[in-house]
Length: 415
Image (cartoon, rainbow, N blue to C red; front, top):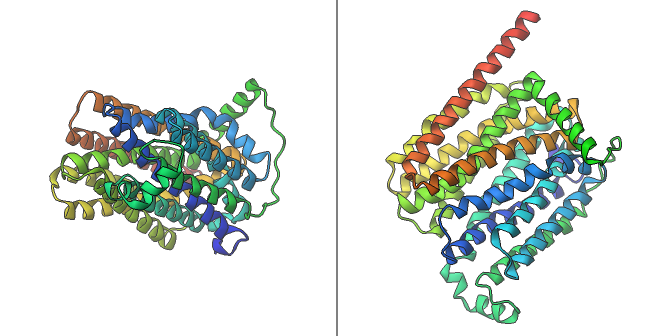
């Protein structure tokens, strides 16, 4: 089992602490913008700026991750996130500061996933990805709950919060809450020092901007032109783009159609995370790497089930539906992610393949968040957003299923 690999538990713990802080910080930044009475379309732009950091740094972070021990890269990434958190406490612009958090996350991802491919044999990658996804989803689950708690009136008016705030030299409303999140980044960085070096080394990469871009574009072509790599990259890119939009859509749905406040909406979002975790665990138990493409139908089911949100107006049924949606998402993305990593490490290298994956996935996130922000600016109702997202999922997943069947048919004929 992957958990028996040296340092695997520590990697999971470090990932959990860092992702927990990221998700909690997102809720705090949303609350900060709402406290400043900013327009609704600014909220999706938080994620846009976070994601833009991923896309712009993509050509460099993968090669940089491969050029040194990956636990050190992860530690530096958490240091950058901590600096962004401190800047927020000091009154920096929330969107700009959160963009630097995104840069830290962009540095962290190729090191984290690349280390998995270095530590774990290919046949165990589905199990390893299930572990890391469960960790990430648990972090999202508890992160939104923590963020919701840290912006609640009960916490902000508590004696402990007031005492800590008086001890700080900052008057920012959420200074204490952000300080607590900063401590999570410190913990994650400390855990990174306990992750062993895999010993894997790669050829040196030139750092001239033209050479970096040439190598990055070549890597993109290699992975996209590979039949299985292209399908899995398409699926994961669509999934993460949709997932980022869903994160904001569930918050909007809960507040407008279910009449919940931000803290309660965050808890409902956490139910989705529980579903993803259950789906990921089920995939690890039932799906092998060789059978990974067979889960594409679960993605179609996700799109077909999404419009049910428009028919629900109470939180009990909302919990049931979001749990089911999360399970479908977790069940199909974990095997697809494992298949992509297996192909990527064969065709490229650990860090470079993850960098390609991250750039594509976050370009999808960026595109869909910009579309979401535009639709929010145009005051499209939540029901319209739900139907648009459902149509995109069903169309995209049907197209990718057809593409995989064509590949399989060609392989049988050629065989």
